[in-house]
Image (cartoon, rainbow, N blue to C red; front, side, top):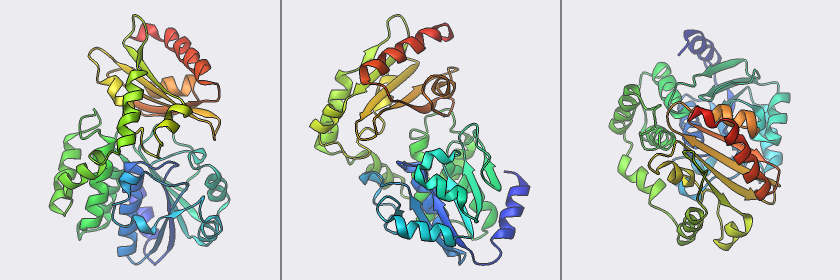
Length: 335
């Protein structure tokens, strides 16, 4: 962590501030964990801290300490806009492009508040006065862990520890992704010592599936296809298939990893139709040297990490599948 960032942030937090904390749209465990942990820290330091999420989050995250304080922008726009207008500091966590927060991006850009970016994705935009960007980190929660450790000698409250544990666990695939380091495990050890219950957190996240979610997983696996002669698989889910299982936000979380778990497979993709938004949401996962971040940026208006990225298509499902097949044919020599 750069000392200049710590020094500059400490200067801004010397006196009580009105702060707003924003995760990306469709917040996951890392986005919610990092924003909630940072909210608790700021409140403990006598700052006014409010999380404004672009939209709602999955039910399997609604147990997290402090989540009831989150303001959902698309449900309370006027109040959210007022809080952004009044803010002294705006923290954007777990994303590095204002397009990731839709209409909130325009408000943040126009705000007179100083912006602080804390994120671990590649190729950050230049919209923040202060930036802590480290793509080598396992998660934004690990970054917040290190930040709080630098700023606060009192340690971690159980609430902060639980939030940070959640984000690190989910963004490392339960500590199995290559971004998991010895320092990550040291952080987890301290969070457990500070009150995070790893068993309970894992059960809350992974052992709370609904009957309909398992039915949807069955449909997804039946739609699994492999690209001929390549270690590449893809899954499709249409809006009709989602509707047949009473789809709820977060139900498809982790589905793409089933494809990557197959022996010999190095690249997996899932394509999920969203008729309301008029697009196909795409998630990419890879093993080894193949960069799905570059693939997503080149072919599907996306990006992310070396082995985990996202993208989108405004074509039909059939057209998107054909585009995907054409794209992988162009990069087949990388396998």
